[in-house]
Length: 356
Ligand SMILES: *Cc1c(COP(=O)(O)O)cnc(C)c1O
Image (cartoon, rainbow, N blue to C red; front, side, top):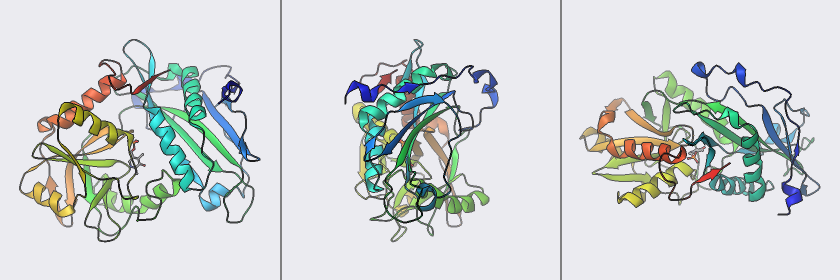
């Protein structure tokens, strides 16, 4: 990549809006920092990127992303370290996944160097928005969508790659209640479940709403064919602990999103000698373990919450309570360790942090 491609044009805000933020009552994803990144794709190539004040973008009513859904995104976070620096957690993994999602959706991939540099420069400029309040971070949302002004189904020829950032606090403030879903499906073999494609989330809202009406936070998705095997929990990957072993659905099917958090948890477990099994996980196995008290832990893993421990699993008419949080030593330890790496309290031995 030549340096001219990586030198973006820059327009700064005249005055920061940061004083408008109510840090005590910060809702997830509703406030946005001062600047955003925008880069157009046309005539078969990426144009010069721009960092500019956060603002609405004009939109043609025939814009193809709205009509046919060529739209993908990523989610990652920047943290304030104890020595006052800002660090971004494993952004290269998001760059790779973004390119994979783009390929599946017939969109031009954003070159890794541009993806990383856009995020780095944007976060550096808005670094005041990364607070050192415990549990807080700056959520980074890169996204790519088709912008052809054309009502006709074909891969678009023009796109916008954008990055916006949002200061966020704790995602869930209580352990979650999940329901095993045996009717609706998130992803099927040959589909787009592995891609972080916008339509996957639109499709999940109705089933999620049904379970929320029954008092749950989220669904546990099962396979589309038999609803016998566990795949994910809401928009997070899912892990279980039985007999001191971490168990998680394997990623060889294309129905499971390949999470950075899950990969990191597995790498920490390997480092600490905690056994991990990545394989098919049946609903039956998890439910019988929960019934006979051998299910030691269950938790969702994803960027928004890092580790979201599950308190209750709903299965058909049954409500299964999981052990109290204090007994969940492995997930508690891994969560604290990951938080400590991100904030520089623990040495970043695996080289996960990108210091801005
Ligand atoms: C983003 C996402 C995850 C978690 O991925 P992370 O990289 O850990 O944030 C898991 N499942 C789905 C469906 C997702 O969209």
